[in-house]
Length: 331
Image: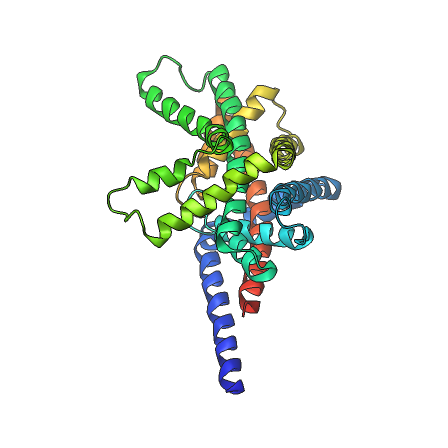
């Protein structure tokens, strides 16, 4: 029996790493690794060091936000293991199809299997973490859209852009409205799923969503101080992302006013909503278009995307290794 158990353990580990290797294969085949290396090599060591330190600080802040939410109801959960989980989540999300989501189940599994939290409780913490993330990202998006309009990249009176702006406005309003409703005991997701005709109201999935959202609602009411602290940390992380993009431009000798930097960052952020691993192709197109509109040569705009790719591949690859180790150790 011990031999069979060992074989199963080895097989699980092999299957996990094969799946993760498959996630890496397609993006790496389409990423210009040589060009990335040439751009990275052209920077000074201290510039690369600053970018790496700032990116590390951003992940510390993102993990701290989640930890503050978790710790409000489970003080035994340590911080540093959650940081590793957060990097693993990025690795899985970056290399999968979709708008930079997909690794969140790792967060739930880590809390449930390592620290004994129930699935509903763990999911509630991830729900709050994502709402706070979206709240800040969409706030920056609103600022970025204002910057894009101010820079003249979109025309406010153009009828073709009106539906997109309305949709984006609704997205921007969703996270704060959702949090406010939960604070007052309303459960928007639960109501939505309960009214879907193809989902039985008493199904396990609907009950699970309701339980998770109810716990998130209770967190909003009972731990307002932790909620505000997590929101502040999330704001700092968002500002760090914007600062990092500005430093990338500066290190590549691209000097632009603040509003144009925000517009460029926003275009890059929107490109990751395209259902492709790492927004391949969309990121490059967004930077060539936006920076080109400000008079930046195509070669320099491509250099920005290559440096961003280098950062994301480094962190994402490390995250996949962490995800593989985490899965293979689950019993």
